[in-house]
Length: 448
Image (cartoon, rainbow, N blue to C red):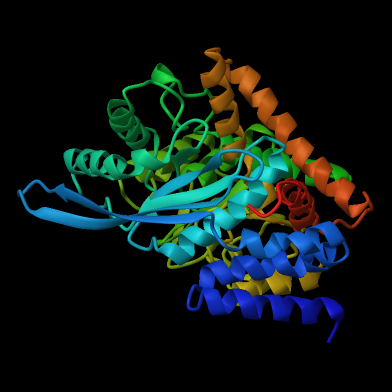
């Protein structure tokens, strides 16, 4: 056993005892620990401060009851959480997710990842995540609004522009952020930037909806450029049909690439000659209506393969998993490498199962972790916070240019960490570069 493996196993024994049964969180911790454990050991200041161990224990984990009334006048009870992981380099920052699969393990993994993602952006942002096990499917708009107001009635006491600034995530879009912000504003008696992802009419930033998907493609372009390639002419398979997936598809098409697949839980939508922008807009409309993407109109020239994943259903050069965590298992990862794909970049948070990640890293495929490649959303959220503070709002063109620069800067930080050679371990570079920034801050503050 190598020294790194021994140190990692010893460290994970401690973390596992404290977080038994929290598989998603432990998976995320292992991924980071394997890359940074020896970096910490070789720096006496960081080792003495036990930086990595401290980062695996949230500053606080807030749980609360959310009580609201449905259309039939029946009282409903849900659980709400906010995991404030670390504010070592800035106020807590991370999204809110409404989904029946939300639990402390999922939120802790997301908050832990957010610490590293936010550090990579270079912006002064800590890491957090929150949400509820509330399921909005089948609920009326009035019910969702009442739930948002009840949720914020509890959360509002723990957030603020210099404390914790939530954003949207799964099932929490601009509409829900509006309802949440309205409740926060009423509770606080003040109008300030305590949430991001707001509508532009009340303090939101241009480009926020597009940011994660567009940022993903800007990062992919930086990876390709380093390898002496261009996006133009590349065939791209994308999983998911949500905000990240469809805006990534839009940007690929704009940059001359060919999108050959999008997907949802029902199956995969295929386009041998590439999806058109009209086809992408049709998918977005189906998503907005809560419908699947089976049965596309004949004029779009698409086919739908029921129960299929994109990775074995199409021919492609680039794989972009953009649906949800742990969507790609080891078998799907093998399909990706067997297809001859040259690059995989994560649009979702931790979409690769542990076995899939191991296979991809062993295969040598150019692989980018979500903490680097999907950081565009939080980058624009950081810019929204700055715009709110200065009461000056930038145009979409200005924000898009800043987004592209931020994603290129993240890429360069990883190159600098890895020495800038021809073969870049993007996962290690992202983990270590982010760790160094947080470790410097934590160790400078003493035992707090």
